[in-house]
Image (cartoon, rainbow, N blue to C red; front, side, top):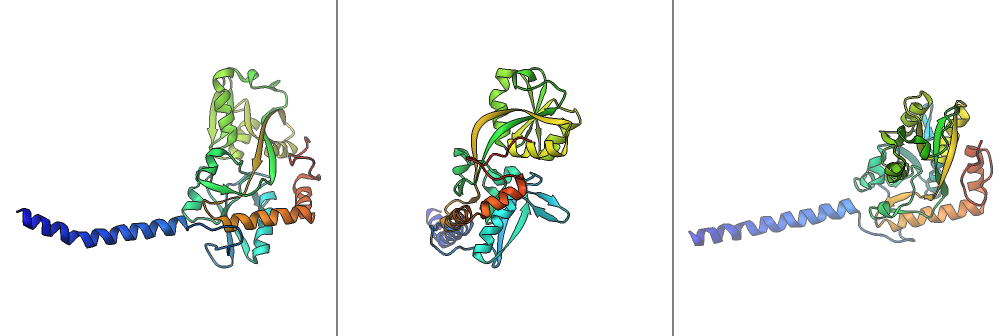
Length: 279
């Protein structure tokens, strides 16, 4: 009995070794290994720079007819131009983007979704140098009289799932006594404010100011100094692509292309930071 068991175990060893080797190879393929600035940029598909984003988030990325356009789209186009490839855009969930899954599952080469660089996100993806400054802002109906979180006591504050706005709202919920309601995307949150389903919505100031321009019944009644900075994300360890993005960002700032793109989407030149002016 003991001898037969031993022979059975020995017979299994080659298969076990093969399984371990296969698993290691699979892990290597999924992670893509590591690279550093100056290395050759490897893309998921020849001739394409695949970008994951989450629509709509105007004016950073949104649909215009059959095209996806916006500030972030134009910036990443500059990276594609430098690489001699075309950008293709994959609209996916923001939770998948900010968790790093979209990059790790090879859905895209980069994630550009007006995404704030945070320590938590830096654990699962690598970010470019910052390309935009933002703060949180409160969107309300113009005649609401609400201009602070304190005035939301007993009321409902809308948030977009997975965002720093949601994080800020949750952090202050107990202090100010409001209810938090989650929305899958920005459009749903803003529409809920416009139609009076909720009293207020919190999100980045750039997108709320853009919404107010198109919807004069609403107003940004307060801003919160959160000092956020957006970055383009790549898979953890993809130093070659991250280095190329930083190289392009530096170049377009120096040659004026960044300012032209900013003017196109915000109707002004960037100031000391990059937060858009109030309308």
